[in-house]
Image (tube, one colour):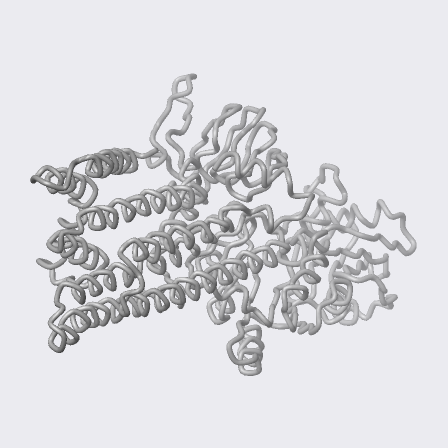
Length: 631
């Protein structure tokens, strides 16, 4: 319990004791008024003070003003118990609201635990703790078992299992080895790591996540904007209505006390607490639930729109595929498979292109680059090199045609590398980008969530793109696209989407940033995604699992459903009790239920967003139980 909650609890306790004592005091004498006044000041003094501050600041018509006028009026009419009860139960509702908001905030604020407190730097043979802001790019830091990785970097030494639950919602540890990139915020569970820093503290993964979370509440949904506009007009109108209810009938029948009491009851009933509290709380809880599941939503407006996605557009490499190229087949002609692979790896040994890296990885042995000479890059075709005394050409089919080499068209799906040795065709090597194991299931789940059309945009060849699209069940495949052409394709889709629906684009590379910004909802793969893609996106998937998109849509749908329920429930009950109050049927005690009771029910309904079990599959049970326990 926070200090504020403890203070509020003590105020309620004092007020409740005085309230009970008031019933024991005889009607005659001033003690009943004094005791009830003490109870009123204990629970309502702060509200009265806020009302006066609002009047001074020109913000007159709010719930504090309504509660103060109604309860002070009740005291003047001699209805002491009713006046105290309104404030007492209102504060009970405030305490309950504070608890609910606190629970909601825990799901997000628990992310703040990933902020690093220190960094281990080796000085004079000893590890010294320094502030993360004092560490520069290129420095070597040490992370010991049990410590949180403080900064982004590349592992130079050591192997370890990383706990990434705080970032991705995934409870299964992930192995890290030398040469791999490592994100700040992960926990080193069992190994000593030496890491070369690649980003300063302000640009680290942790800093970006915290910035996204802290700014999420500033981007309000349409529902929240509606409630804000509604309250701005609603409160003055009901105040005027209450004054009219007290004055106009009294001019005809002279029963000022009766109509004033009805007007005060009318004011208590009219307080818009249920709407003002429950709608933002629902979206806050939804953003928290999504963050537990490894999905960072940059604002409640984006959370609200996710469930309206009807067109889902995907980049291929790094989004639906792993973005890691591997040699899938070696087809030698006139030479051995080992000779073909070694020769090709030597020819590509001076390049850092992903294709070259995959060839060197497939050979898996040290390469003697000293035997390579006269290396030349042939733009758009491949490379030429002299290896020993042999002239080797490695590249695409266009290169073979330029050389006049008689070659056999390879039938594999992927990038085909053809090899010519001393003017003779020596075979081909097929390199493929592996499809993510969850990609097909992700597409199926999206269609279950109501996505009417799935589209894949890629710069890869038509043959490869069609094969990937067919295996995943993609409706439309657009291949051999430049980045600008991707934007054009999205523009065409935006023109054809149904009214009120949303188009989402999912990508990961820096070339996807323009498309992410143009789409209604931009979704970036955060684990391997570029900084530009994450910056441009509205939603970030932290574990690169495309299934999380459907999960985020489920969170969005449930949030919207709860918000709609609360709006209609609150407005319906308020309208009914306002009519009953105007006709004198509803009493001040009924007004307490119409205000505080409805608020508590709406808050309880909104708190349903705090559970993430309904959004996960049985296989995710470990993740859910762990994240909820930490929250």
